[in-house]
Amino acid sequence: MARILTLKDAVGELIRDGDTVAFEGFTHLIPMAAAHETIRQRRKDLTLIRMTPDIIYDQMIGMGMARKLIFSFAGNPGVGLLRRLRDTVENGWPNRPEIEEHSHAAMANAYEAGAAGLPCAVFRGYLGADLRKVNANIRSVTCPFSGEELAAVPAIRPDVAVIHAQKANRRGDVLVEGIVGVQKEVVLAAKRALVTVEEVVGDFDDLHPNLCVLPHWTIDAVCPVPGGAHPSYAYGYYKRDNAAYLEWDRISADRDSFLAWMKANVLEAGPEVFAERVGTLRNG
Image (cartoon, rainbow, N blue to C red; front, top):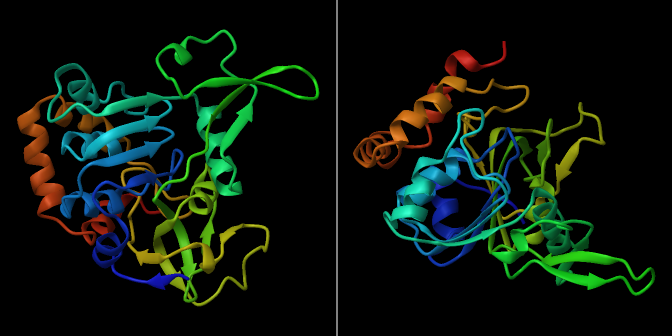
C-alpha cells in the first residue's frame, strides 16, 4: 500500500545494495530526482535496467554503482554518445559492469511478462539479427500450434521499479499522462515500487477515468518532487531542457569535469533543486 514519504526516506527503505532496479520513463517522466537520491545514498552493486539508458544511467554508471546493465539502445538523445558508459565499457572506469543488450520489443515484452507473472516473453523478433550472438538470454521457441519460430527472453522482474508521474492523490493512486512507455508494466512486475510525482492532490474526480492510473496497492512509496524529471519533460508541467542534454555531452566527456559536476549538482544538492531547474520551462 502506498505511503507518501520523502524521497530520502523512500530510497533508504526500498533500494538496497545488490538490488535489480529499473528506472523507467520513455522520452518524458524520466525519474532523475530518484536516481540522484540513489547516488547520494551510495548504493552499489546494482543491476540497472532501462529501455533507453540516457544521461540518468550515464551518471549512475560513472559513479560506479552498476554491477550489470540490461538495456535496449543507449545514448544521449538527440546528441550522441553516453560518454561515461563508453568509458566503463572500453576502459573499465570506474568499473566494468556486465552488459546485456536487447531490442526495445524484447524489453517491453519482458516487462509485460514479468507483470503477468510469466517466466519468459515470447514474441516475433530477432530474425536475421546478430544480437543473440552476444546475448545468451535471447533464445528461440517453436509455436506448438503453427510451428513458427519465435523469439524468447526471460521475464523482467525487478526488485524495485522507479518511475516519475504527474500526480498522486492522498491515498497514493498515481496518474500518468502523455507517453506512458512501460511505467505501468514495470511497477506491476516489480517487488517494490517508488513513484516520484509533480504534486499530490486530493482526488482525481475531475479527470477522465480512462487516464492511466496505478492504484495505491501496486505502489510502496509516493514522493512529491516538483521538477523531478528534469531535464526530461513532464507533460502538462514543463518542457524538455534541450540545453541540459547538450551540456551533458561536454561535462561527461572528461572524468574530472564529470566528478566535479556530480559533486556540485548531485552529492551536495537535494531534490528541492529540481523545482528551481524547471523554472522557465514550466507550461504557463
